[in-house]
Length: 300
Ligand SMILES: C[S@@+](CC[C@H](N)C(=O)[O-])C[C@H]1O[C@@H](n2cnc3c(N)ncnc32)[C@H](O)[C@@H]1O
Image (cartoon, rainbow, N blue to C red):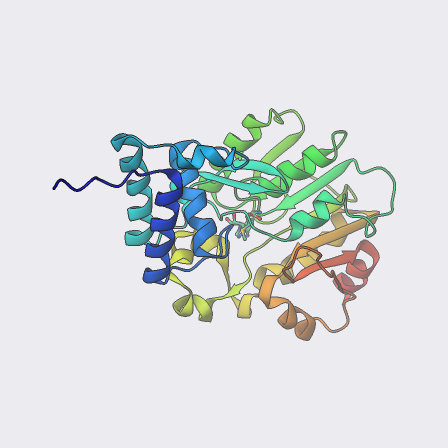
């Protein structure tokens, strides 16, 4: 008797990928936090299925070419421990989609939550006109800020020329070239911007160098320049604290992501008034500091 071959569908491929991801003990931390979601992300991408598709779409028989496309992605995820976003070149941040590749960090800062709330209740100054995004990477924070504030101009810096090329691609996708200016610079743009910024946003590298060896392999696909900082993760944060006040408007605020390094920030800068935000969507390490608090700190 002839055995009937199993019909392969999106649903069966998701379940198969999930099982293999679990067996391989992959790490999730780049947009998903479990094997099922990671499998859905890759399978739907390969098959060009929208996330809000009708359920019966998942049970349609697939062609051998479609199955092969999914298998290529699943194998790459398993064999190279490559984060899914680098395989699909897509990631969402603050509700917007961005192109990503291994030249930039995969967007995931919980700072997105504050952006989507337009920094309420933290910013209460005059209408926001100028914004600085320090360490822009893919451009996600600067672009999301430009979209949240259609009247504002945004400067975005990065020390990595490679990252700026990715940011430029995303800026062009959102047609923001007239309002968002990319600068190859060490933290702050070289142009004179004394007293200019209503908002300074920063997701700087803050992982202590010493933690590199203990990180799951997935993180080692990201640029080291985007992750690691000397002085137990504080080197760039310290320089941002010192340099920000002079470039901020009197009602301005600095909003920064210190991730898991936030207790070290507290310990290293006890006299600096940092508000650590309670995040509804989870995550921690998002700090807000007023211009006046930073100005006092810069004088010390
Ligand atoms: C944690 S990543 C953040 C990327 C992006 N803003 C995001 O949230 O996904 C830090 C970024 O800062 C950049 N960077 C590192 N040192 C820098 C410096 N001294 N000046 C400007 N940018 C720097 C890195 O190249 C990287 O793109």
